Image (cartoon, rainbow, N blue to C red):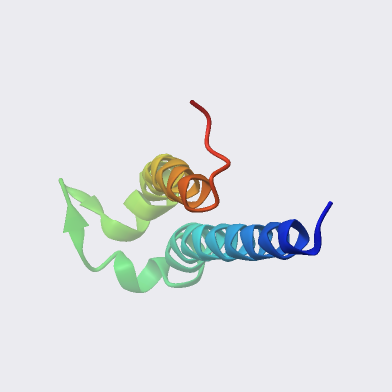
Amino acid sequence: MSIHATKELQAYWKENLVIIAIHLGIWFFVSFFCGILIVDQLDAFYIGGFPVGFWFANQGSLVTFVVLIGTYVYSMNQLDKKYDVHEG
């Protein structure tokens, strides 16, 4: 493996880890911070007749997780194209 390929591989994985860290940070914020730590403050507001804290604890983290899966796939496809390692 050439030095150029090694540097590209390192840059690819560095960007991949940044994408993963951002997605995990968002999921942590929604599921832990909003769903557990500040749930009492969020319960003062309502979405569809349910307290927002309850919504975050029961549905918000799941909905966020599904959205994050989609954004992760999109981000990785863009990264794969950037480094020319995409499929097909």
